[in-house]
Image 1: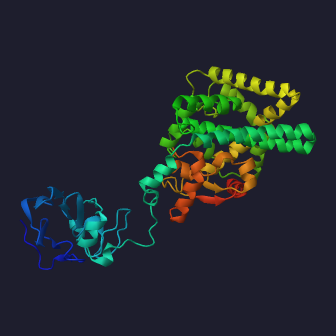
Image 2: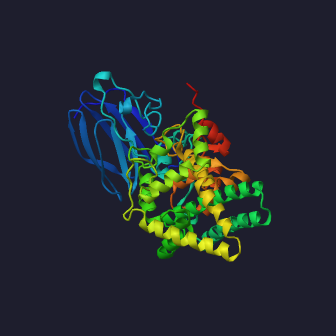
Image 3: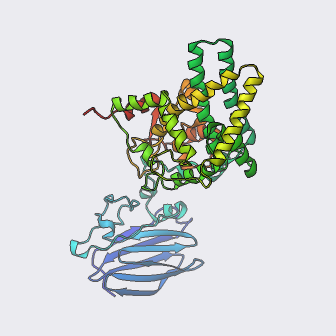
Length: 458
């Protein structure tokens, strides 16, 4: 075993001696490795074995009433007591100077426990295990035990388990309320045009209905995550017949497609990637896309891909349902015939054209805007708080563009099984607790459109 150098680095525990025994650790680098000496009062901790070969060592510790644990690789030390551990880092870990902050993204090493050896004796990076707070606060000086006040808490820290359970709780009546509200606005639009038929009311109805068609798609999206209704059979049945089929979609193929998006967000396997990577674009290009949406060109293209069973709606992407188009087509025909029948029974069969026109025009526009807002033009695709966007919507945006809280997309990606009616509360909790400081959150969809059209013209 190598002889310690004459100037070891020492860390002495502070805090209440009556509450926990004092521990003193000396860590020093020798010619071929490192040594650790530990003394405790009154608890006895003694090394039972030690082996050093070249630059690696393994020391096993035994403590009265504690489980056995071990440390390995030069430059790292860990003392175990019960299930709580402290990692002490000897000179050279991560290549940092004593008292300096590591240059990597690894957890911060307490000051006084890290140093920098000569370049010829650099060692591989050693993982640093974070100690539990009660033990850690007694094994390092008080000033070092405190966390950095400027550190942003993680969303897991901000939402303890009991809070998460409340956010994940399903309330069927809330989903039925959303379904009724969406269909209520659709029939209110029909009634508006029936009572005052003029170009202004027709345009208003088309945009309200288009937004509610997106709203029904969002409720289908909840059904795809199995959070629309508690009973899974009713979840899928209602998700299809009252939400998906009327807007020519299907819960079952969408579920497989969409869950892959969650699992592979911003990777080459993300099926939504072709929808977001072209942005930002020029103003002229964005105007052309919106024109194609509002004139029905995009809707006609989407209809053709849906009939072929390509649920990605992207040429050549090749995501097919098991029964290409047939089941969705049957459901669409039945539900749309039912809608037409209701309007015909009311003596206004031509009002059904508002539904069709809205699907081909305004619905395509708000669907595109949703896709742009959720993942395009983000600052860091590797950061879960920066690769997905929440858009703070005003009342008129919630009516026309962002139904059923679809604008809280960042929160949805953090916990994808939170039902839509709990997303605003989740957003308020995360914002109040500092998690969203610096996150991808913008105010209003006009700001999203400005970002989308921010590429200079050639």
